[in-house]
Length: 147
Image (cartoon, rainbow, N blue to C red; front, side, top):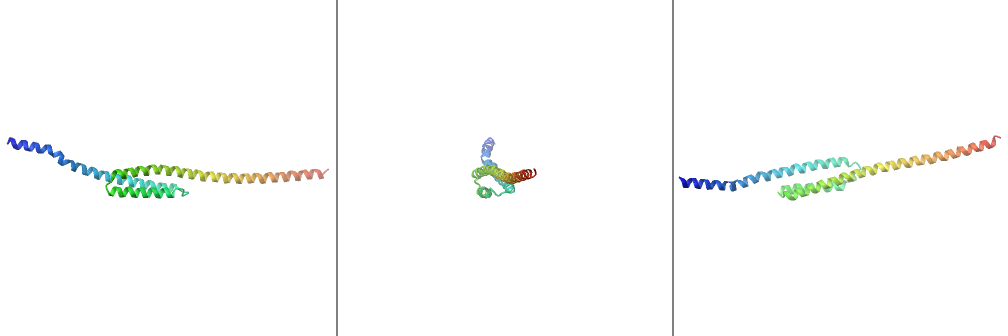
């Protein structure tokens, strides 16, 4: 009886070794699910960037981001989670750069519009100055003829 108890207790010590793969497997599945959620969130963010890019200044960069997300999805399917996370970090950094480029394009378009408005205003001022000079010379010539 005592020997059976000792064997049973020693088998209990080995139980964690047998349970370890069962504990690791759900963690891998959770990591795949987390990566899937991260990739889907990045794809939604990419759609937002497309909407923000009204001047289409970042089409090439957004296409590159799409390719990187496809690569991350492929790596997730191959269970290469660490490299997929690195690709997602690259995507996140690139998205920040694209946002900055979109803002710069928007400001550039606004500056161009203001420059065009300024050119129109200068042209109008020039025309008014010319008209004023003509009227002044007309008035002066009328003043000379009167006396």
